[in-house]
Length: 486
Image (cartoon, rainbow, N blue to C red; front, side, top):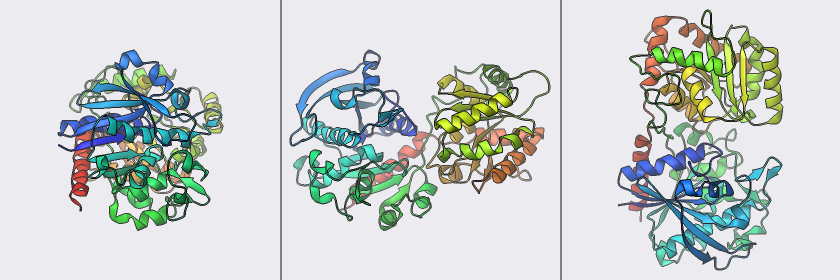
């Protein structure tokens, strides 16, 4: 049995700001179902503490952290049993009992380097004290990358970790964890790591670089993204290092937990439906329009949905430039999301100008998200880059063909629909421009107007299988390969 320690800064249902939480909350369960023994390690945030009774957390112990020079040096370990894996949470009130995970609306916490250095070191100490010897330490994104630096430079001769191998998964290369070099000694790492061949990066200390340098294998969340980040366009300054380590770099597509995302069983919907009986989808469409206060009677008008972070990375500026042309196509647009204030204001102004055609919900609501996936006719994802993307996988399952920019995981999961052969599951555009987006939307609308093609496209979409079980098998194969190495 392979023993795996998952180290992540968030995981559902404990804490979430993005897709990392979905991965860290779902993948361990599917690894466990395939026979792995998995422990997931998280910080115990203030928001998680508020739900402690719901999560059945059990206080374990009170530990000191030897050699730590930061502001706090003690932690408690709490535990929760989840299906076929365990979650252990590091409690340190001074570092983690705050509003927000990484910062507030005013910006990131200034001591984030110290906070997540403490978290990673506490995890490794906790495993030693609990006699859990992981075969694999699987760290995720910059917040967990210091764990691999500790394994390389602090625990290299430690008997407990002598056989441990490591995997580092990059969920978004743009977020790297940059700090001043003098933090190294405070967090218990050698000052000599502030060097261009180690963790130094253009005069700063780069946590994510440590994950790339010191891991046995590096993965990204889609095959295309693993290739893209080796180029200057997508490499965020680390493309040279990634090319150097390309022999250990691969992409494993994220998955979907279909027990949570299935229109045949989804209790959040106005009606349920299957590929063989799509009548419920029409009722979901009517319910969606009513939810956003848009006209739902009369001749059907195409509904295009988005569930997204309102940010330039997600291509929302491209969408904003396209709005007037989109509304000339006689469609209705619904958007759920929040993000950059300038984009929120721009979209709100467009909503006020087109109140019968544009529904906008600033914020996030899980039920409204499900309604959009089910009730829309098309789902739009104009991202400038997208490491994997889960929303297109959700929309496919709900029979809502996606219109996407061909990048990262969107390129890997969406195949352009071919009307002549009735093959494909959506529509793609190459350039991050308003013209390219509009051309793709018009192609999609043309197909959706023809009943036979529309039905074929919807059924193709719903037949796609992006389950976590497939991804879990690929991760286990990777674990076995690196454990077999000398």
